[in-house]
Amino acid sequence: MNGFATALFGSLRGVAVLLALALITLIGFLPLLPVALVKRFARSERQRAWAARGAVAVALNWARACNAAMFIISGVRVTCHREGTDQINGRFVLISNHQCWADALFLVYALDGHFAFPRFCMKRSLRRLPIVGLAFWTLDYIFVDRHSREAIRRNPELRGRDGAAIEDACRQFIDQPITLVNYVEGTRSTAPKRRAVNSPYKTLLPPRAGGFGHAVRGFGKALDGILDLSVAYGNTPAPSFWAYITGRVDHVALYLRRLDVPPQLLGEGDEAIAATRAFLSARWAEKDGPISEIQSPESSRYTF
Image: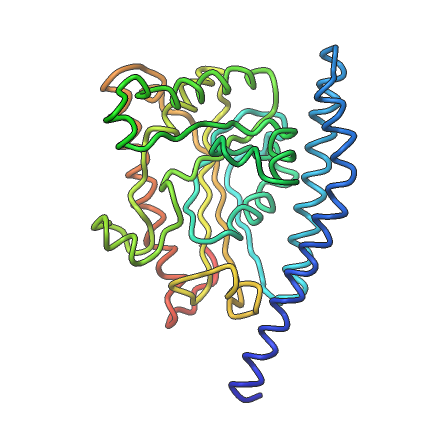
C-alpha cells in the first residue's frame, strides 16, 4: 500500500471512529436523563444513592463501548500491567501523565473492575456544555473556578478558594468508593510546552502539587492509597488523538500501581507542601524514562 493509500485508509478509520463515538454518546445519553432527574429531585439518601450508582453504570458502559470501538477500528494493541492489591470499593487519588484526549478513556480501561470509577476536577464553566455538562454534574465531578495567577494578583481574596473547594468536595466522598483523578501536569504535555517551562523531563511537564495535595488532605486518613498511572504511546514521541484513531499508533502501554499514602502528605503548612512536591517529583523521575523509551521511534520496547 503506497503512502497516499495508507493515509486515506487511516483517515477513513479516524472518521469511522468519530462517527462511532458520536453514536455511542447519543445512545448513552438517553439512560442518563432519568438518572439526572432522580438526582435533581431526590428527597432521600436512598434515592440519591440510586442516582449515583445509575450514573456510574451509564458512564462505565459508555466508556467501555467507546474503548471497544476505538480498539477495533483503529487496530491499536493495549497492554495494561497492574501492580498492587485491587480495592473496587476504596477511596483513591490517582495521578497520571497526560498527552492527549484518549488518556481519559485509557484511564477508565485501566481501572475497570479493579478500582472505583474515576471522577475528575473540572472548570466550573464546563457544567454549561450540552450533554457532557449534565453528565459531569450527574457523576458528581468536582467543579472549581481555577483562578489564574493574574486574577489572584488583582484579587488576593481568591487565593486558596479552589483548594478549599477540592478539600470540601473530597470530604463528601469519604463514605463512598471513588477514584479522584488529578492530572498533576495541569495540561497536556507537548514539546513546545516542555521547552517553554524548561522541563527536566523528556516526555513530561513538571508536576504541580496544589490540587493533588488538597485532594489527599481532603480525604485524610480515609484515603486508602494513591494510584499512579503511566500512559505511553508506542513509537510515537508526539501522540495525538487523531494519530491514535487513524491507526498511526500501533500499541499503547499502561502501568497502574497502587502506593501507600506517605504520612507527611497528610500534614499542614510548608512541610506538607514540600513533602507533596518531593513525592510527585520522585514519581515523575521514575516514569519519564520508561515512557520516553516506549515512545521512541527506534524502540522495540512495548510495555513497562
